Length: 299
Image (cartoon, rainbow, N blue to C red):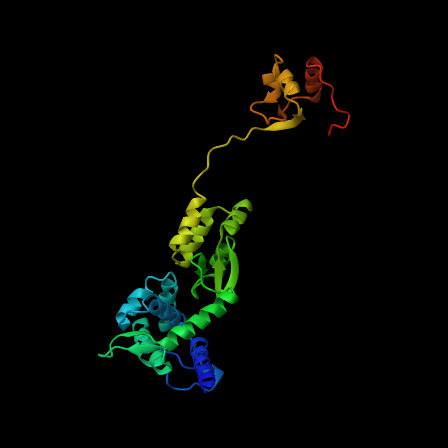
């Protein structure tokens, strides 16, 4: 019986986390919407994610709905969540505010599912033993599927233009998280974008247009590419004399016109020929230094 009840709890939990028939973001959330055309999916699923995350962080503390909401605002995803709820309220009737969603998640859904315990005054909540077990099981499934949210990931908002989304994807790897578009970033993905000629300013402009906030980890990653290791000088050359021998290299550098012929500094195993120097001048220099030209020299 215990095993069957455990499976039932897990099924109800997954249905609540993934489904949209019951939606705390709707004023009439207890009215069943039988036809697909009557279904209106709000960003409530993300509010559930953030509320659960807040309760997990404070697993031993009693939190009021206001305190849970305050903890949710510290999450990097909250900016997207807030913007999405505001957009849904403007476009649709019957969508409640985010300030009403969090109490509904705690007092109605989580309490009914047995995910939380309530304080004696019934005004504060914390994860129950069942809630902790279900959340741990879900975390293990997410990790095995490599779909956990990273601080180097941007959750793309509904209001974003296609152009901004594509520009943000230039610097990372586009994918989905719980069915939502995301872009994951890494040192390798940023370096690859820079090698293709995309400056970081382009990423920053796209981020500003999309009205998204960077996490501190992502900000640190980007700033690391702004710190120069040092300065280099680009010198034009027309050829490379591969000596492979220190004595031959020194013999060429001791020629009176070496400065006019070769770039200095040059690699240790040879000398770069200055741009515009004719091949016959190099031939003459080699003869003067008593060095033979290899017959297999590339033209």
